[in-house]
Amino acid sequence: MDETDRKIIEILRKNARSSYKEIAKNANITDVAVLKRIKKLEESIIRGYVALVDQKAYGKEITAIVSIKCEPAKSAYVAEEVAKLEDISEVYTTVGDCDIIVKIRTANLDSLKDLVERKISMIRGINEIRTNIVFNCIKEDVSLVSCKK
View 1 (tube, rainbow, N blue to C red):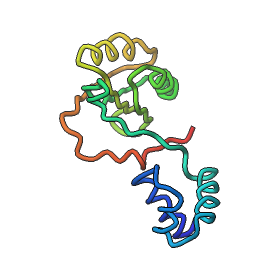
View 2 (cartoon, rainbow, N blue to C red):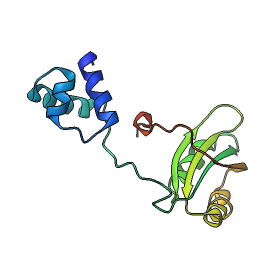
View 3 (cartoon, rainbow, N blue to C red):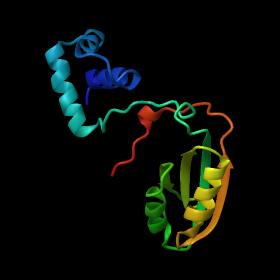
View 4 (spheres, one colour):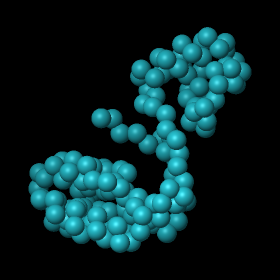
């Protein structure tokens, strides 16, 4: 990946709907070169394109960060089970005060309570769950968020 590829990626991160012509102009290369480079980047670096949705307008009023402590050697299993649940947007296994960090986007406090108490807490291997409700999002750059599957 060279500086031109990095420039193309930055343009796409800002607006994935940029035309090849716009990208070519900003990257100082031809439309054909942009097409070839983007195809290569899609095979190696770019994982996809998404529509960024206003969560509140979409009916997801609550964002919560949940920390989970697990029984020894159970974190991978618990993380996989949590990831299957509706309204879970991110799941990370961690080292530190907890074993798993989960980001939830859900409709309201009742749906959050139901998800944590009736679904997450029922997964075998969980010792402790701590839920934090997000008041304000200061920065969220989803163009940098990507877990390899």
